[in-house]
Image (cartoon, rainbow over all chains, first blue to last red; front, top):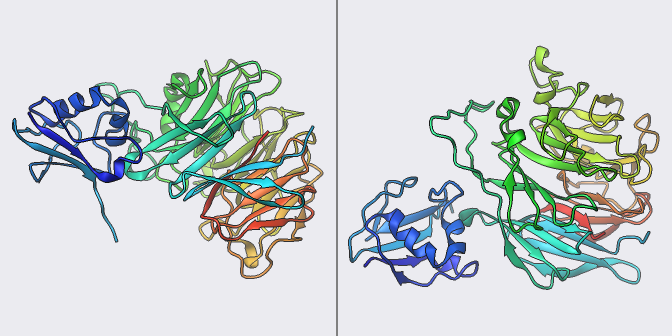
Length: 89
Length: 372
C-alpha cells in the first residue's frame, strides 16, 4: 500500500499525517487520502482537481509529469510526497 | 447612529484590528499574522466577520469569526464549475484565455437586511458567487458568468479580470450593481437572475478611439453607492472619476480634478450623495502620490469642485499608494480611514479635515473596513 507524506508547512493549516492508502495512480492515492481528510483537498488541488500551481508531487523521488490528470503510476510500496514547489530566492 | 470605534485592516501579513481608545486609535488585535489577508468584511446583520486569505501555494481560503476576531473557523471557498467538454475560452487582451479556477477573493458584501445569511463574493477571474448560509457554501452566478460579454472581460493591472465592487441597494436587495476591472459596471434588478451592462458615459482613453466609450471595456477601479440615495453611484476609474444618478444607467465624467483624477479608492457620504472622497495618484503606470504628498480629495457639491485635504498627512517624500478597498467611511459620514501599500494607516474623525496617524509600519494594506 503506498505511503503519502505531506510538507510540514501544510500542517498549521490542516493536519495531514503520513498515512498508507490504496491506489495505483496518483489521483487514486490522493482521493483515498482525502476521503478521510476532505479539507486537505483544497490545499493541494484547485477547484478543477488539478495540482495547485505552486505545489509539487514526487513518487519515489521522481517529480510527477501529469499535474492535471494525476495519472502517474504509484508502486504498491511507493512513497508519495506532497510538497510546496519552492522557487525564487 | 454611533461613530465607528473599530476597524479591520487586511494586510499582506495578517489582519489587524484597530480600536478607538480615549483619544486615539491603536492596534487592538492581530489575526493570521504572517498570512496574506486580502480582505476582511464585517456583516452588521449577524455580527460575524469574514476574512479572505491567499496562501499562495495552498490557495485562497475564507475564514469566519463569530466573536469579533477572538476565534476563527475556515468556511467554504467559492469553486468554479468544470469547464464543459469542448469549450474553448475566448482569448483576452493579454493573449491568455481565462481559466475557470479561483485566483482571488476580491469583494465580499452582505446581502440585504432582510436576507439573513446571504453574502455575495466577487472573484478573479470574474466570478460572482452567492452564499445563502453565511459563507458555508457558494454558488457561481451563471447568468453573469454565461453572458457572452463576460468572456470579453480582461485583466486591468492584474492578469485576470475581477469583480471588486458589489453594491446591494438598501431599498431592495434584489437591486445589485457590480464593478469589474476590466468590464465596466453591471446591473441586476432581480437578485442576479438576469444582468445588463451599465450605460454609457465612462471613457477609457487608453483604448482605440472607436472603443473608448464601450461600456464593457471600462476599467472601473471601484464603485460605491450612497446609502441614503442609492440611485447615486461614484466610480473611481482608471481614466478618471465618474458619477451616475440613475443606478448605472448612464455615467458623467468629472473634470478638472487636481492633482489627479487617477486613483483606486472612493468613498461616498452615507447620507449626502454629493459628498465623496478620493485619494489621487499620478496616472497610470507611475502610481505614486503627486509630488510625494499624500492628499485626500473631497467634493461636497457632486464633483463640481474639490478640496485637497492635507492636515496630518505627510507632505514630502511620501510614496503611499492606496488600493481600492483601503479607504472606508463609517455610517455617520464623519469617520474615515485609509491605509497604504507602504503600511501607513490614517483615521479622520471630522470628514477628512484632519488626519491622525495610526501606524506607519504595518505591512502593505489591502483593505480597511469599519465595524458597523
